[in-house]
Length: 295
Image (cartoon, rainbow, N blue to C red; front, side, top):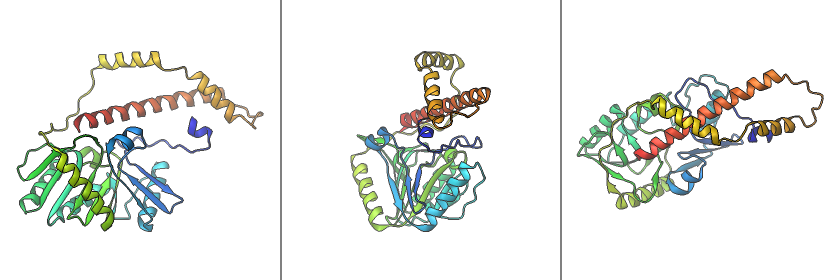
């Protein structure tokens, strides 16, 4: 409502994927901000994460194409191998990226649980590549070194290959984030940026603690009784929607006094908007809480 009242277009995502989790901003179709963090106080001030700003024409155009497709709820086809989109091309491109490591892989990941990706990391480790992970791994392997980030919350998804190439995005090496959600990342080669990212990794690694084996991903439904209890508790504390709706209608009606409103249509639209907003917000909070508890 607040964005709409200021003339900002807000498009609802489609229901074809479990969640839309990508984080990017395109400025004037000339500059792309690709982020692995949300624009929240917790992520910006209290979490380890990264962002990349690029004016690379191909990446910016591809990001714009994805944005247009998603806002219009149309299918998206990849046209740039360095612009990684789940579930379109991210798995394929990340597999090739990891497989290309010759000396070293530095990885930030909340929880690596995809079996194919774990096997690939193990293969590279057996081939003599030093593989270090800050985060968690669901399968113990003596050749893959894992540490837990200390002193700050982990939210980054980064892979640095041989200190020359890097991946950064919103997708972890988890099946859900590679195959079931909209996630966005990029592959890039910028010596100065990658050197700084590797320096941060080295500092975090030095201070890190040896991580314990993470539990494999499981899907469990919250008990219905607990869900109803939470719903009743929250419903009592939520302020009435009527004043917000009255304000929005008043602002929208400025200069349109003669408009003939279909009140039944307004009522149905508001109900659907509230239902969608609550569903999306709760899903996001629960998933973020799960990620944080596992980090």
